[in-house]
Length: 354
Image (cartoon, rainbow, N blue to C red; front, top):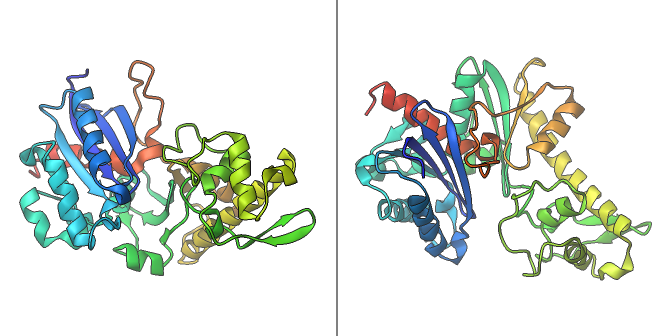
């Protein structure tokens, strides 16, 4: 158990809780990800927070909290979600050591959150972009996660986002609801080529993007923490069966090579969608020398897109990672928002903001 952890970044999502732990020098010395499906209730989230509390010595730590989980349909609306998630957090960690990220308003003490709920809701992308703008002179940051993709342009230390919340960001193409794990296959394409014919896909939740990338060999280790669409295991055999069900058939109707070809086609459809989103942002006047920064468990797609567009690609990984007992193998790039709020809090605290 480390006793030198001083800053903890919490990214509370609808499906996952991500935690980044920094020491007093700002080095990333621990990362944790937990499956916390809020649509099933908040019990797994509370349990995950308690696990972190037990695993690390955090008596002297300051906590930076950001979230997207307030959108989960277990809450009546987003305001209720923000309040509920923070109350859960305060039940595990001290209020006076907690700082809530509110986008353009920076960090807020718990007492100020009620008057800034719209700024707190789904502000994790802004924290990541703000940190990137401090680490790089310019860039198009693209975070491809398990569920969504965020695209944020920054230049000369400024975040140049046009949207400020999920609705406006969806409108201007800075938020795309597609990811490499949880996205239903039916959201990737309506038909696929199979045995020389175009086969319409069932409008059902039979398979997800995790099955696609598992079959084509690109799914990162540890990225898929939740249950499969049918509750069966994550073997190639059952992934083929889930994908075949989307075509109204069984896996025995095709070979492994055929199902991989279907997966490759679906992956290409997702790449094209994210590429179009990138081209939309580039059309704002982003010059050719501006690099594309990949973040999230699906950043391997960003590298592919950058090559197609003739852009420089870099992994968004501004902080060094210290391996903790050989178990902390995840990179900061996998969990940009959690790393970002922890790092930004460290900077703000040392600047005597609080």
